[in-house]
Image 1 (cartoon, helix red, strand yellow):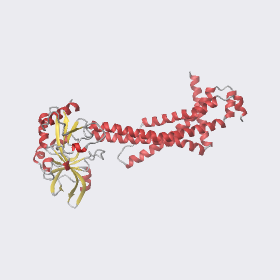
Image 2 (cartoon, rainbow, N blue to C red):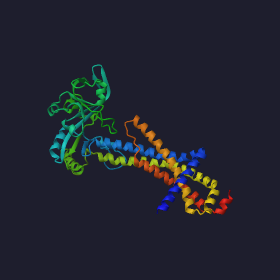
Image 3 (cartoon, rainbow, N blue to C red):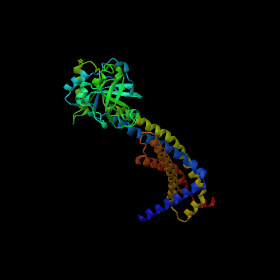
Length: 423
């Protein structure tokens, strides 16, 4: 067993040296041959790395919506019939969820723990003295919002229940609002103006970073919904009101969903045969849609990279045929000295694998460099994972086997006398 092992090590070493010598002597030919493998591995692994980063980011952002939270809304996130077409005309005339409905469903839904009413006012100008920020989002929330959406408050505090219920002109601001209006970080106790109303800042939310689902608090001003009645009509489609409901500990989303559905149908007095005139949205709807998206991206990566690898495979096969032809006399001498056919076969097969792995490593290095640069430029962690590295090397080795097997078999089957005469 040990003799065979050391024989393989010696064979691998010799094949590696042959491959390295082939690269050194025929630089241009070798570079052109490896280019296809390099580009192919780069294309596949780069797309997979980008897809992994995108998937991680989106799933993390979706998770901030709450895995145990259901959103009672007018509009569903995906078609309710499970089809591909979104029948917006079917949902357009639905009534908007209201605060009174939230209070009623709160009494009916025994499986629910926390409720919060939320309305959004987009594209607002926030002013402080001579400074102003445009396109900010004003989030109008009922008191228990902070028990559903995790808010890390850097400075100050959240609203008290009395402040929320009485509609005090108070506000929490996001990190981008603070940096834009208060560069020195002294926002607490200052007053900002929204739509002509003055609000006192009582808290600053810690920077969260960008969100793929628009759930970041960085560019938001959070105000009590009872004060927001002064700013906007809460029964308007423009503010897209909805109710967030968090399940009790140990209650599944399925149980909560059934409980809420029964309660909402009862509140809106819907007959048994009537369709729901509300939507119950949850993060699983987005997660299921993401699976299809990332599956398509993976297929695109395989197609783009596969074409380059196919070309690279033909190039490696060509360089191996040339290598066999150039070393035909050496093969004859080796066989005449007692070298077995499998020794010759493995010699050229290992050389092809080494060449492909070398090209694959160059592709992986390029992916690493691009990923490092992209991470520095964007708020994404483009990490070249161990699984993607392993995949790249495995694909490279597989292409080496496929491309080198026929030239290696041809070399192994040579007649030693004919091979020596070829010199």
